[in-house]
Image (cartoon, rainbow, N blue to C red; front, top):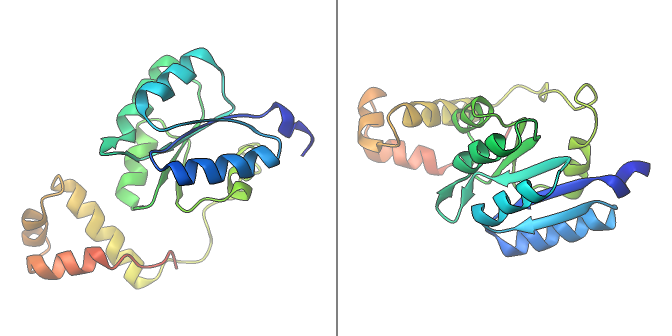
Length: 178
C-alpha cells in the first residue's frame, strides 16, 4: 500500500503485550502507531494529533471504553473510531455504534484486519454472509436481555424464565461466530 507511510493510528488498550505486538506489526507495514494504555494518555494524544483511525478497547482496566469514545468524539467529532473487545455481543456492538463508533471488531485482531479498516468505507467488507449458528444466536439474545437488565443475572434469568445457574452456564459458553 503506497499511502501506508502517511497513515496515523492511535491504539488504546490496557494489555501491554497486545499493544506491543499489534503496534510492531502495523509499523512494519508503514503505519505510524501511538500506543497507550489509559484514557488520559489517549485523550492527550487525540488533542495533540490527528489520526486516520483510533482503535479503542471496550474495557480499559475496568474503565469503560464507551466513556472514552464519547470524550474522543467531543474532542474531535469526525474522528474514526473502531471498538475492540474480547467479549463481543450484539448488545455491546449496538451500544458502541450508537455512541459514535464507526466499527466494532472482536479480538484477537491482526494487522491485516486493521489495514483493511483504512480502505474507503465502500470497499470495506460487509457483514459476513454466513448465518450465525443457533448457539451463537441464543448467546447474543442472552447478552441483549442481560444488558436490558443492567447486568443483573437474577433479573435476566427471571425475564427469560430460566434458572439462574443455567443462564450463567450458557453465558460462559461463548460460541464461535458461525
